[in-house]
Amino acid sequence: MPVYANYAATSPALSRTVVKELCEYLGGTHLNAGRNFEGLEAGAIALRARKAIAGLFGLADPLRVAFTSGATQALNMAINGLVVEGCHVLATSVEHNAAARPLEALRKNGVIELDWLQCAADGSLDAGTLRKALKKNTRLLVMSHASNVLGTILPVTECFNIAREHGVFTVLDAAQTAGVLPFAAGDSCDVLVFAGHKGLGGLAGSGGLVLGEAACRETRQWMSGGTGSVSHSLDMPGFMPDRFEPGTQNTIGMLGLAVSVEEILRAGVEKVRERERGLTARFLSGLTAIKGVRPCGTLDPDRCVSVVSLVVEGRGAGEVSRLLFEKDGIITRSGLHCSPLAHRTCGTFPDGTVRFSFGRGTTEKEIDTALDALSRQARHPPGGQPL
Ligand SMILES: Cc1ncc(COP(=O)(O)O)c(C=O)c1O
Image (cartoon, rainbow, N blue to C red; front, side):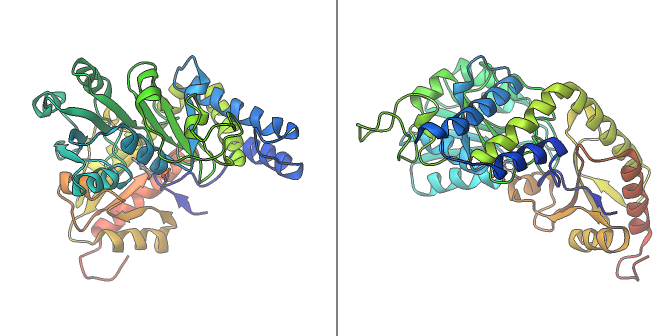
């Protein structure tokens, strides 16, 4: 059996309950919401998914949740919808390209001024860095909740409080933390972005954003089209969630998310966190005993999610990752993980790292298998025959 250690990229399997409900739905009629009387079921599924996501992030109003094709689309919507010509934007030096590329495109096109908040080599950020970087025209702060390369959790609540004092809009990229780290969006950030196919256990091609009251008003919609509502008008409806959901929606993705998030809520996000923290602690403590392996992020499991990047001294990340798979059936991800910024931050650009990431299916035995395989790789002399 292969050992899957690439949960930061995607969750490899849907839960049985998700598969069962999806099969039942797909075996029947599936119409689009808001377009016909029979489509009421699709509308009910969308509402069920909004309620589940609202429950996860402690929101009173499920209509503040809008669905997208994933975190990338949601980040593009939030960033492009909130900036104004000539404004200053801040983002951290560990952002994923899903945020970094739209920001950089706006900077190159002369729309925004952009500064990166420099994180330490282990991915941590001192909130004081934000205070120093704020300018009169700073309008937006974009922050990952946890780096997808280093796993390090960023001080988002502290930073968002500072941002709020200065009237700065805040966008939280929770792609790596939704469903695995308790977080009440409430009033703490203006926009929270989530991916459906990682810790939330939903389908690829699902995700979305949760908007606070001011963000609902101020975010310009990036795409217009039919919503099945206010159809007499050539303008998009002003109300949520229609304002951000033109066209036929991904009802199957929403159903997957609804069922999966309901399961997570029944289990309790705190319990999920406790379990994954334990697995990460076991892995990190094992790593410190392996000579020749250098973990790149924090060694404190309280300060990271279950994402660990490492370097095997004298060996290429791609080679290590390939051998881990070929010799031991361990699936990791090597390279730059769509975040050149994070690798520059921790000094592993352009070679990259081997990233292990764990999730709901990971067992302690798999952690030990991974440690054992890594210690054999570390003993293998550079350029010599693989063990
Ligand atoms: C931190 C972070 N943000 C954004 C994304 C993009 O997510 P999606 O695949 O849902 O577009 C990822 C995916 O790896 C990520 O790790």
